[in-house]
Image 1 (tube, rainbow, N blue to C red):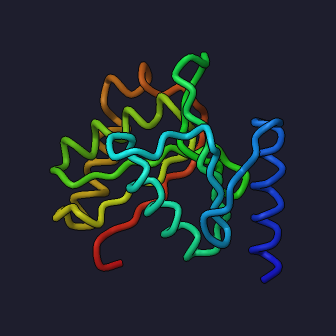
Image 2: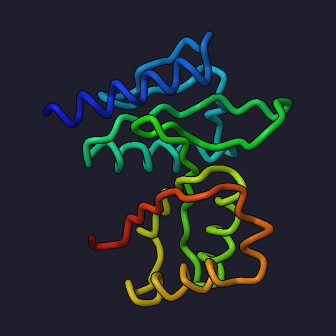
Length: 156
């Protein structure tokens, strides 16, 4: 309980610092969304909301941040427990996973990859991520030092 409160405090602090005038809407206990975020069918919002629900089920607090295409800089999907995070949903093969991981590193240091719809095994996933990390394109795509990768694997 104490850890959940600490995560919520960190998430709120980061959201308030990064988006000081934002009027967050609560969409579920521990999940907040910016009213300036597209939620239509073509926006990817339904997948991102599902990702937020998964993270919340593990005790995280999630702020789905505004999506302003006119704003400069890296555009990430959420603040999770105070960390900038990019969400990726992968249903394809190992090449798709590598490509999505490389893209994610252009947006945020921390990545949540939802593989619930993928038939990749744990070993194939690990091999693909090591392959992406050792890919000659990685230094060009990676805009951050450090970071976390959180995986949601089908059946786990």
